Amino acid sequence: MNIMRKSINTYILFIILSFLLLTCAKPADFDNKAYQYASFRDVPGITEDEIKAVEALKEKHDVFVYGMIMTNETFYDEDGKIRGFSALVCNWLTKLFEIQFKPAIYTWNDLLSGLASGEIDFSGELTATPERRRTYYMTDAIAERSIKYMRLAGSAPLQSIAALRPQRYAFLEGSTTVNNISTHLSNENFEIILVDNCDTAYSLLKNGEADAFFGEGVEASFDIYADVAAYDVFPVIYGQVSLTTQKHDYIPVISVMQKVLENDGLRYLTELHNSGEQDYMRHKLSIRLTEEERNFILNNPVISFAVENDTYPVSFYDTRNKEWQGIAVDVLKEVGLLTDLSFKVINSPQTQWPVLLKMLEDGEIDLLMLSQSRLLMYTHFHEHVGFKANIIFDYPFESTFGFYRNEAVLASIVDKALNLVDTKGITNYWISKSYDYRRKLVETQRPLLIGVSAMTLCVLILLIILF
Image 1 (spheres, rainbow, N blue to C red):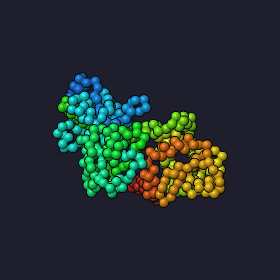
Image 2: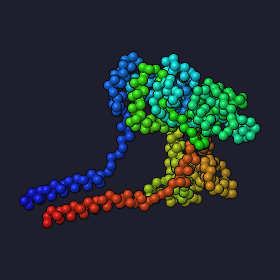
Image 3: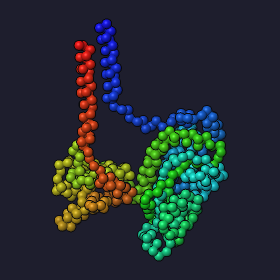
């Protein structure tokens, strides 16, 4: 009887220990690649009829034309190759359906007529509306794009124009942006001008017939014009676009894609969209760089950088995490992503301000983060001329990057990159960020407490078994 009792107790002890081990184990990381299906056949919920229908399309078609207009999502690089989110989507769809999806760029009117004629098989340019769903076969949203407006650089402010006459706003004819902006600006008095394409919109801006042109992601269409600037609409308005076709035979592709979206596919598409947006920003910077600046980047991939250790939130050394942090550090990370430059902090956390200035003066470092007042004191009061500044922040404080006097090319590269970096967003993040090391301490102690509790419980159970 005692032997049986001990056996039962041992078995119970094994169950309890197993439970404790499972409880204390580190939870498995979410597999964020699970929705990248190897084939359309693996999509959850796909039916045998849909599989057969897609297989039949594979027999009939070698290539599907994926039509888009010139946007931040679809643009030509310097070699004439289509890049951006749309190109990434086409690569993904090609692997998923085992049929080549080929991106192609059209004007707005040609895109609509191409879908109607069958010249264009699919598009990711149209927003799904009840009216459009009567004409097209569409999925739910595959991407979300902010609406911006384009204006001639240096033109009169819209508020000044509104005081004299109704503003004149141009839109692509047939786009949903017209309704979005009309609703958003319902209290303003403005005239609506409908255009066929972005080139016509530029002509209207140039000759004064339009004050602004509104569109979703159309900034890339105006990159060829040096006198056009893009502005965000506030509060930000987003437009959604869907995978679209006008061919009845392609319904199976739309159906399968809808199932992908319903099974976390939008998460992957969002990753592709972020990658495509980064690709566009790199392209936009590239076309602004001079040949001298390109050569500088090729020949100087690593830039020596010095930061102060106590100017929170601009730059500081986090002794707990043992790393440099702050606005300046994050901004330079973004500049590095755009330029392929690597910014390396070479001073220690103990380096004092006079030493940092001496390093900059002697050319040991290429740039230094400092407040504008300190730079002015150094250059104007102490008469150390020849240093260059890039003012990048304008909040309750102003801070700059100070460059070594011989680094005019580097200063120009960083200036151009900063125009494409969301410095305001990074600044807002650090201004609102708070540290709670107590929570981190509790999380660090939790495994120890669980382990001690488990060991105590094991000892008690052993005592019960033995005695």
